[in-house]
Length: 376
Image (tube, rainbow, N blue to C red):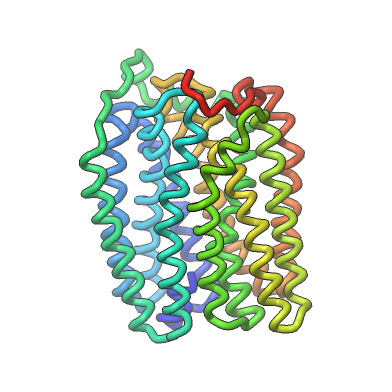
């Protein structure tokens, strides 16, 4: 969002609306992708997703009007939906039950090391403040998806699991939609996802536009988050060994809530103290990400049959897409009304996630199980 605010004349609320509309457009794509994963295999869909995102981000460089922003952000949203709906099944296909928290954690850490570099570059672009600096960052982003596509060509492709459900995509989708226990997981992850989007859509705008903190602070927010995940994810996942998954989920939401409270408090502090407050809040917030991500994804992957994994994970991905619809426009609307409302809402959402964790343990045996970090 900050890219469009700094390189175009598109107002904050219109930019937020465009991103939310883009996320809405991607919703039906998620369900289609789930069937495609079960039909042709996750790797092929993952390759296509990276190609779509490369084209979409390259299109950012041409945006001058809101309708152009709408087109390219919709393309990126479709690519992202396809990526995340096929990413988890791809990992599941080449790993074994019991060790998936480790693998999802490791891959998330590796991804975030890349984000750390991006955070530094973004902070530099914000500090420089010119349109050229922002354009160069986006061009590099587009190129990174091309590189990812090339690297994925070397990942082994696994044939999709054969099942009678495969002949009728609606049958598998209906089964997913009627699965109330899995639906509870989708709702819980939706709240977690909304909190997760605060890193990209609320914190940078809050620090740069609401508190008017130095440009390097925005870059530091991303860098702290990505370095902590990159260097600490493996340690945190191993520390989970022996603990029940639903309790780890609850603790993740507690960390989110505390981070949001500290972030809100920074709004009433002088600049120097506000900088410290924002950075401390980022550290606590990131602990929530370290705890929740690997466990939630593992529960989603392991709780249902492999032959329907594509469709189940696509439905799970809907929680992220719905959060992406509500998040940008909702955060923009709340931020336009002052520094506090967005953090109050996010704190309430986090506490709701804490309350839902025991429910998941009752309806999903996988959520009540202990983390083993060992293949079974």
